[in-house]
Amino acid sequence: MTPTTPEPRPEGLYPGWTPAPRSVVVTGAASGIGRATAELFAERGVGVVAVDHDEWSLKEIARLDRVVPLVGDVSTEAANRKAVALAVEEFGGLDAVVLNAGIGGTRPFEAPGAVEAAERILSVNLRGPVLGIRAAAPVLREGGGGSIVVTASVAGLRADPGNWAYNASKGAVINLVRAAAIDYAVQGIRVNALAPGLTWTRINEGVRQNPAFAAEIERRIPLQRFGEPREQAEVVWFLTSPAASYVTGTTLVADGGLDASLGVLPL
Ligand code: NAD
Image (cartoon, rainbow, N blue to C red; front, side, top):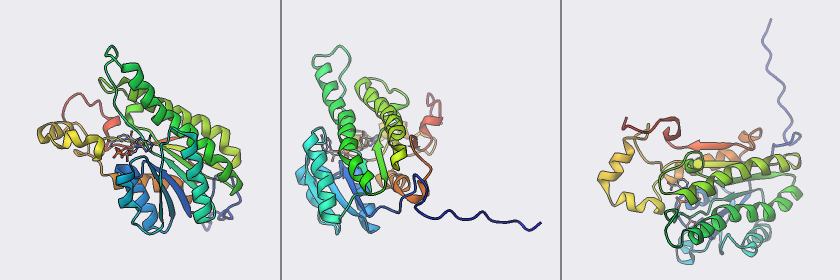
């Protein structure tokens, strides 16, 4: 018998499939993973609304073609709504959002101010994505569907020492993404999380300043190195692309094998 190839499905006729994004909102876009994501999308012809509360750093990314900056705090409803409205105004619609802004700053459980610090972490890392989903979903739905990516962390899958509030916020994000994915699936909106491992950004500047410590950590990562922001951006690109049309409610881990390893001994 002659082997037959399956009939290609007509594009756009099944839930989850949307064309490659033409416009995207990226939060935390002034630095690190968010900045690399904004750059990569803009290079590939996508209109980007770049949101960050760091006005000074945002100026650099705003010099790129197709990037519109928005100074705002993602823990506020106003900033999230404004970002979505700006995408519609500037690019005629919205196809994807990358809810990436995040902070650390956990204090030990019994330290003074630990609860207040945890509340700030949760307001950016968890409340931020909740507000982002609420603002973007109606516009994505109106456009026939779309994609939401939230930056979680391997620290949401396992706990690292002394980092309980950040660990809790990222664990919550992973289950938020599952919940949003099932609620929005019938509307053609896919929702996924990116879980980066250790990546060279401002967050790890302290480690970079201490080469001996950095080398010690790298020996415990199966790929023997930190990741680059651009490598995380490529995963976001995939998750928002038609290639991921059947991917929703999941967490894509990009960590050089860290989460797969017992991690106790240097390799
Ligand atoms: P980064 O500090 O380089 O970038 C974070 C950006 O978010 C900054 O530009 C900052 O100004 C912005 N931001 C913070 N709070 C904000 C707020 N309330 N409103 C608007 N913007 C705000 O760090 P990064 O490593 O690129 O972090 C990006 C995401 O990746 C975060 O969610 C972080 O938790 C996650 N992550 C990073 C790593 C890593 O090793 N770098 C690992 C796992 C997860």
